[in-house]
Length: 413
Image 1 (spheres, rainbow, N blue to C red):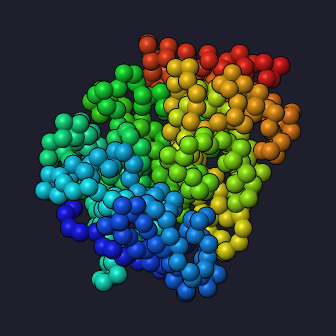
Image 2 (image 1 turned 45 degrees about the horizontal axis):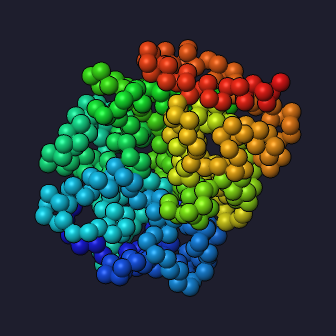
């Protein structure tokens, strides 16, 4: 993992299974703001299959500049869990210097990097950080043990996780990508510090969402010792091909530290503008939001929503809303990360109904969707039991559902 990060890299995007040179990126590691410059390759701009990698990177041959990373590149970079692993790995190898965004972006596994963007050496033409061995399902016990060991920071645990490419995935919770045949799964692990069955509750929430008509990636639970592991099929891979991906954060051209709170109406506006099937995607977004309210899923920030690139020629409307993920019930009476028309918590269902037309729904259609959500949420005991959620954990879910139960019932009378 040691070694300097290059000042310039070729940026490649996979389109319909073929690697295409999209442009070149430059990083100024010695500047306080760590600026990044990107320029498209003229051949890419002229290609019929080309598309802007990021909403802030219009298809032209000029230079584009930003501090940190452009959103599309940030979506390829690790989040808190991966960053901690990289920091620990470099520190143990005697490289404790301050790391830049480019360090995190270019040091993670190319084989498991999220989305369709890849990075190649300008000098050698080789892909950076390639050749990772993808763990198999049968390796889950070793990975789970390494995750537990990494909490105490032993060298071998950190090395195993870095070698397995686990630093590529976002979020704070320990994760790894594992392979079952030709299919890649994200394995999300329990932690010793968990105060409740976080994994079982998330699986239950996703099951409820699917029963309510929300598109959710295929998933299942595995058990390592007595601890559940959530296995979710990666939606940015299609029979081995890489699928372009943008988080809603990038699609809306926002940053994690923006002072004003994001809103679902902003996401809906971009779905209307960018989706290949805005009617279907707006309906999905509305139903997903209703489920989040009904389950009091408050960690619904913009990185927990995304868009996938379709295999189409260049034109408007070639993105689709990605499957729902990271839905976690929260029994605490606190506000959500993404607002619903700026509404207070008690008014969120009403705000959804008031703005149904912006999601291409009539009032009757919205009420029908809410009835389906209510029925799905009403089956929580059955679904929770199937996922090993019982006792105080089941009570926690019940408490989260109770926060919005009256508002949900009132909206569909």
